[in-house]
Length: 274
Image 1: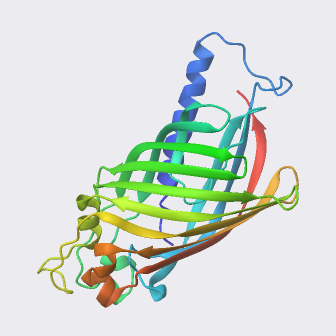
Image 2 (image 1 turned 180 degrees about the vertical axis):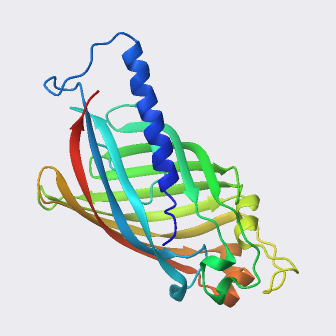
């Protein structure tokens, strides 16, 4: 099982959120109590079992089982913002009733010849990629979320990516929430080249990938509350590689422009104070 691309982000933001809470304690504010409305955190933790491409551009036969965590939190009494499985992890620094923005982080797993089938034989490896940047969300209506992420890679695929999302939110019953919406990714030359350029040393021949519109697709999710604390979740996402990513020798000879992932999971919500 591959390391989830989100695990490192969860750890980082857990540490950051705890650090912020400790700073608040040092300010002299009274210790929060479960009995004081708004003076504690509502935390949701859980996880997904998922099937995802073994590497960007992989074909269906090169999909792998992996896991990804669920981690959400908000102050009691405040708005619970929508968090979807393929969002980069974000920590809001500013928010209003229908808008928020803050720092974001993500993680792309390494590409290694030993991690997949013969599709990667003779293809150069790519190290783990840690990404940092910012996100912004705007709700033009209560049932519609728009989100933008700008992420810069610092290792591995050390380029810039912009993720554009929109999600329609539908609640047919109080227990069930469904979402669906388009996805689009734009990348710079460094990002595209790191993942899809190949040289004479690679077994598929030479190809120079440039940035631009990288992929487009759709994401759907379902969430059902079994109780006030326990929820079941599922998601699916399809993206079509475009431009040089789709035309690259790796995708044309060894992979597929269609990228599909699905996952099912569960989460537990509880109150937390310190």
